[in-house]
Structures are given as structure tokens and as C-alpha cells.
Amino acid sequence: MSTTARYVEQFAAFSANGGGTAPAWLREVRRAAISEFESIGFPTPKDEDWHFTNAAPIAETEFRLKKAAGAKPIGAAELTAFRFIAAWPTLVFVNGRYAPELSDISHAGAGVRVMELHRAWREESALLERYLTRIASYGERAFTALNTAFAHEGAVIHIAADAAPAQPVHLLFVSTDAAEDGHAELRNLIVAEHGANAGVIESYVALGSPRYLTNAVTEIHLGEGATLRHVKVQRESDRAFHVHTVEAAQEKDSHLQSFSFASGAALSRTNIYTVLGGPGSGATLNGLYMVGGEQHVDHQTRIEHAAPNCFSRELYKGILDGASHGVFNGKVYVRPEAQKTDGKQTNANLLLSERARIDTKPQLEIFADDVKCTHGATVGRLDQMALFYLESRGIGAELAKRLLTYAFAADVLETIDIAAVRMSLEALSLARFAGAGV
Picture 1 (cartoon, rainbow, N blue to C red):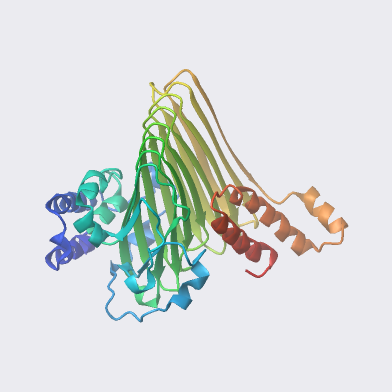
Picture 2 (picture 1 turned 60 degrees about the vertical axis):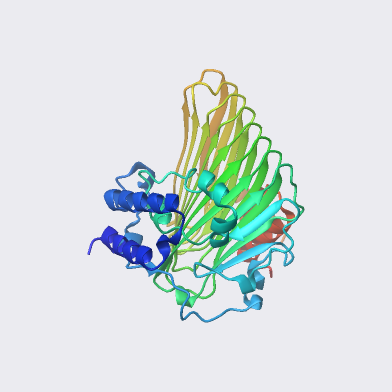
């Protein structure tokens, strides 16, 4: 059986067993999406955006749709290490299924509605019909098409006009040993109305070391003047595969602040795309990836300047050890009408071993003549002069290397605007590179 045929067969069973109980408009979209997936198949290195990432290990593994049946229940205490602040409104999903007993949204705050996708179909049907599957295109995108076909679990966050909740919403996606050889297709929607100002964290984590596929899509709509601080944390199993697309549509004077942290999974890829569709809008995309062994980590970004007087800033840093492989492909696209664009893109990488490697490709495509855009990439090793300085002051060679590596990571972590998340990820990085306790 071909790699796509397995999923087409699963889709038929999924639809026959209740997956097709969604609204009629979504059923039509699902059928179109699975047809697109069947037509294009999984990407190969011949595809430009996948030139440095081989999806064959995913395509050749016979993953099945994750099922809750038979899974051993987990307790709240097992999730403590993955929570930032317990009082934050939190939706928890275990092995691709909503876990109400582990979730608590009572502190969501005025003007914020948080719910799982099934409930949203009943209570926010107009909102879903307007935005769900409308922002993230599945045309010529295999993993988004696959996700769209099976979209039935995930979270919906609706932030009312001018709402400014004091606490961010935490979406926690957990995989356990029961997830072995399963695939979870998670679909999230975040809508911030005009003037709203909010934070959302998505965490993808694992208990144990199962092999599975997480394929997630998050769609974001930012109304006029809205600000969203979005943090994505990927700490999956070291045997897992992870593909996540975050796609945003922004109106006038809106601001997307995105941070992607990736340290887990055997193979992971994060796509972050946004369209600056209104004058004065902006995007700040930052990230840190830390991998070792034979891990492969890929970040793809695209910021499309589609209106005048918009700005974009990108800073991605990578730390690679062992025989790991990193990929960064960032594109800033400026339309002819996007005059007065101000864009800056930077990718910096630190290689800790002779076998670690990085493929980095920052890109500018500019079709306007009144712009200010820069881009650059660096790849290097630890500064020998700095190492000598530390060692000359009594710090051992190994500790000196770890401290300099942590300092490299801390520089970008400091850009995270949610203090509890920033401190937690700094502690994780310090533990990894300096041996400190978390």
C-alpha cells in the first residue's frame, strides 16, 4: 500500500465512524483536503522548501490515528514539569484527545473564551466557519492538507475587542507511551478582535519515549490594533516526529510576537507564516533550537508585507551538538504596494561538534522601491578568546564552554515577553548547558 493510500483508507474509516459529524461546510473542506493530499503525496527533497529535510521517515512509517481507548490515565502531578504557572487557564490534550479532567479554564478572564474544538462547533459555529481552514492554505502543502482532512481535536481561543487578560492561555499537548505508532492531527484557532492584547502558549511534550507523529496547525487572525504574544514549546519524545504550521492573517496596526523553542523530537519542523495585510502592522518572529545526537530540526518562516508602513523582525538562534542537523529557511516577501517596509532578519548558529551541521537560507524578495530590509546568517564555534578569558580566571574548560553556550542561548530567550515562560526556558537551557538544577 502506498504511503498516501494508508491515510486515504484511514480517512474513509474516520468519516464513517463519526468524523464526518462536523458542519457540512467542514465536511466539504475535509474531502477536498484529503484529495489534495492524495494528489501531491508527502514532500521530498526535490521540493524547494523540503530540500534539506527528508520526510521519508514519516512517510514510510505506518502511523495510525491516535485513539484514547486503552490509554493509561495520567494525573495532574505528571504534568507539573510542563506547566509554567498552575493558575493559568489551561486546556490539556492527551494523545490527541481533549482531557477535561486535567484542564481548567476558569481563570481565562473577561472577554476571553477558551474551548475545545468539539464545543466550539456548537457554541462558536459562525466564528469557525469564518476563520477555521480559511487562513492556513492546504494547497500544495501535504501536512496541512492531511491535518485539515482529519481536523477534529484542538483548541479555539476567542479574545474580544479591547480585552487584555492578565494571564496567558496555555495549550498543553501531551503524548504518552500509548501514543506509540499513532498520529495526532491537532487544529487550533486563535482570533483576537480589534484592540485585544493577549498571550497564548502551545506546549508539545511527552511522557516516556514513544514513537509517534504530531501534525498540528494553528490559525491566527489579528484584528485592527490587536497584539498576540504566541510562544510554541516543542519538547517531544526523542523518537517522535513533529510538524507544526502556524499561519496568521494580520489587519492594520496589529502585532504578532512569536517565539519558537525546539529541543525535542527525532525530526521536527515548524512553519511560521504571516501576512501583514494592513498598514502599520508588524511581526516579530524569534526562536531557539537546541539539538544533539542525530536530531533534525527545521524552521521555515515567511513574512509577507502586503501593505505599506509595516515592520518585521526575526532572530533565530541554533545550538547543534553531536551529529545533529539544523535547517533555517526564512523569507521576507515585499509586495509592490508595501512601500516604507522595514524588515530585519538574522539567523545565528553555534556548532558544538565537528559532525553537527546547519543549512541556513535567509531570503528577501522585494518588489517595492522604498524599503529598508536587511538579512544575514552566521555559523561558528565558541569564541576561543572568550574561553581563554574564563579559563584564565580559574573556570574549568568544560564549564567555560557550557557558560558561553548558555549565554548564546540566553540572548534570544530574553526576547520572550511572558516572564514565567522566559524564566522556565532559561532554566531548561541553563540545566542543559551549565549543569544547574531546574
